[in-house]
Length: 516
Image 1 (cartoon, rainbow, N blue to C red):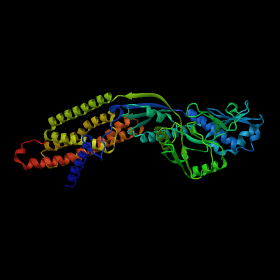
Image 2 (image 1 turned 45 degrees about the vertical axis):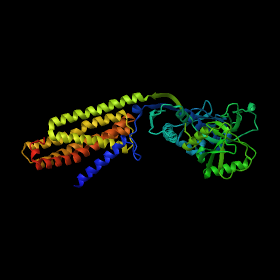
Image 3 (image 1 turned 135 degrees about the horizontal axis):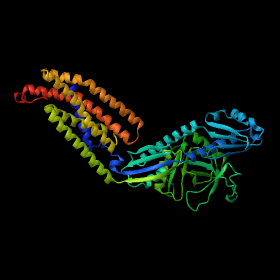
Image 4 (image 1 turned 180 degrees about the vertical axis):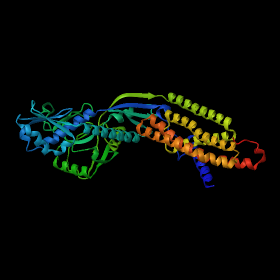
């Protein structure tokens, strides 16, 4: 009785969950449709890893220049390039410089390859293969996390982010037919940083080879002058705790931000030491504003403003700050817009495939197994209901590959019933009682059903782990289908057969019907 109550309760609950896809229910969302069924936007992005590596070499070279002391007399210059760092030495006699350098910077040996070029009198530093692989993997994961946060904050959901190749990401957003805002979100690195402005050097006189600790920054606004700033930032967007859109006394939207304890401490110290100087706020290398420091800013709060700031600009900047900066620049290689008409065509084909599969299976089962065939058909329909309810509960995106998994499940669901029914028929041929035949049929078929379904589940597990996109959708839907069909065949179907046997023996006019 407990199993019967559980089966009935679970079936009623699953029917309620499945009904969310027909009726509007506040508590349960409908099954979201994938890009291939709903239409939407697909963008292929390339990570500019080389540019990131170059920046890392620049930072490392600056670190070496700053920290090296006793060895400075041996060095002419330290030059970072896109692929390595060259430390030019004063003399060929400094052959033991590498050993001295390694003792001075022991931590660099963990991720740098070092070799001495006797001809050029230089020590060459470059990242080793293991570090580059680790760095690339880290950049991919950070980029995916930031992209997901940005898209979620913009109100879009059900996105798919896949690694396409060693330096490419594929973004799929179902239901999105215009991509201008999405492209802005993806193309902006959103690297926010604050720098001290150097007004003592004229723009025309600035030489980056002489003033290595300084750099030129252009304005975000057109026709605004460029400024010279310190290369090293005071702090970055990572030190910003919160950011909100507010209005100043002139009714112009501004971005108000609050720093964490580390950022507040640095900001307080820098503004105290640099009163009268300007501080530039940069976004992706271009300055938004460069106000004068009139007094120390101790509270750890600040405002980013611009003459041409609109509410949309301020809101977008807040969204970018909250979601964090991308570790690398993303270049858009390709964009596809899939129309909803193509998705509708796929949906209709999927519906036809499921309906035809169900009708054919029901017809064959009734033809071969009589009343048991009818019970099998009821069990099959309940299996489909369980699958739909589980997909709804998990909020799993339905794709054409998912539908293929459901169609395959329909055929596999009947396999279990066929095994059970054949065992029952064998016992009935031996003139055993119906109750005994049913019990023996389920007992004999259980091991075969369990083994075959567990084997398939293991295969789907590895397909989901190793596969991407459509393969994962197929593996997930088939796994859900296997679990639903096993419950339906071994629990629900058994209860239906016992119920049928009970009524066949109770009512005389039903006794003329064959069970199988």
